[in-house]
Length: 176
Image (cartoon, rainbow, N blue to C red; front, side):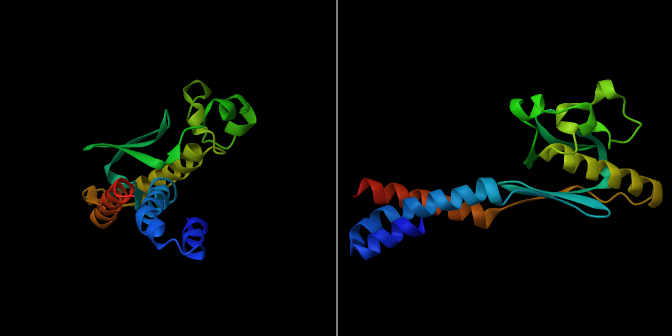
C-alpha cells in the first residue's frame, strides 16, 4: 500500500491518490482485520477469543467442551464460540501428520476420538491443547461457587472504520 501511495505522490498524481487511496487503505485495513487482528488469549481463569467483529471472554467454569473439527470451537453452557485465529489443518497438513504428532496429548483421550485438528503442531490443536490443560487445572483448583458470565462485545470502532473506508473506496472508484 505504501508503495502504491508513494507512486501516486512521486508522480504528482494527487487525483489518483485521492481516488484510489481509500481503496488501498480499505484493502490494507481489511487484510489486517481478517488475518492479523484475530487472536485467542488463554489466561489462568479464562480464554479470550478476539474475532473480526466481536470479542468473547469465556471463564473456564462456563466451558463445557473444546472442539477442533473445522476450527477451534469453545462450547459453553450458553452457546459456541468459533475462533477465527485457530483454523483446523488443511488437507496437505492433515496428510503429513503421524502418530508421533499426537503423543503429547493427555492420555485420557482415546486415539480414535482425536481429530487432525487436535494435533499440537497445528494452529487449532496447539490452542486446544493449552485451553484443555488450563481448563482442567482451573476446575481442579478453583472455587465451584464462582460462575462468572460469558461476556461478548462488538468491535464497533473497527467496524465503523471498515464501513467508512468501503464507502470512501466506492465513491473514489466511481468518481475516477
